[in-house]
Length: 334
Image (cartoon, rainbow, N blue to C red; front, side, top):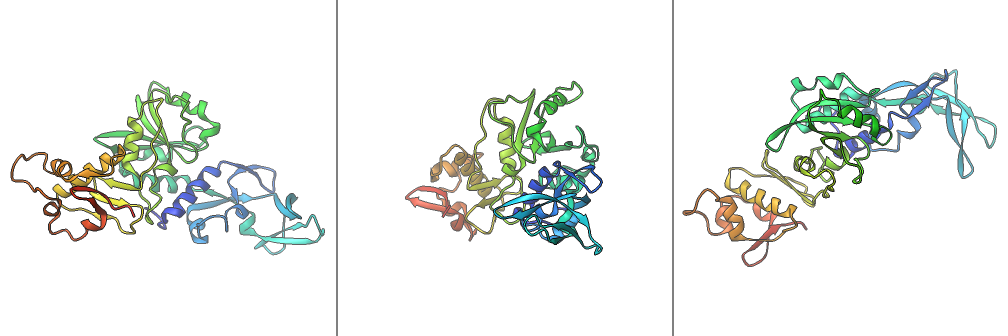
């Protein structure tokens, strides 16, 4: 990822902040700014002060502050202080002057270009295809991220925020005859409700659902994106499984394991990929013969007859593949 790499948890929090950055906040001059006040940012997320400085920009300062008053908070006017590092307000309980830092009074907005390039990095969109990131649509809430390889095909990827309040506008835009017939729209907030039929052959998914949330370094569940595209218009999306196999990097990730397993060669990854594909269909325990058949699908003779032979020389496989009963194998999820 670009600029100050984030952990998975911090990226999810930044995504939430990006989605909330369209919210209106009045500044000291009465103008409507779009962003999130500092008091709703600092201490409320896993983002550090450095993360916020790198990924957001200050677009102004709030004109009011929800001051504590008993068990509730009341909006009070914020005023500039002689000390430029703070703002003052009058306490609604004691009527005394109190202060908050200028950082808390600042209205923070996630920088769209920087954030979207980070998402494009995770999806694997080439830099040369990202021109749409610098040309936002629909009042700055829809972007054409570019084309990415999902499965065997290259697909147009879009990114939208504020989908809940702009579904009709987004749908009208996607019906434009100049756009391709199909594509994938990632949302920083909600996904499209199951009862709403998407336009043409477009499919929607929440970016929060496709970010693999059980590994420390951010990654995208490309298989889930593929299944989203393959889902019927009136279908439902299956939840993220506790295991994921990336066929392009030949990497197996299990939620309960701290270290992903990068598998070399061709036969072993083919076996694990088959096990994963069957897990998607809720088949978690398979016979050795079935797994070996997938690993040696191109050979009818001179192939391994035992799992131990297939994984000969690999010292890690037993940490990720369990043998719950004789001749049966599945992922070691505990």
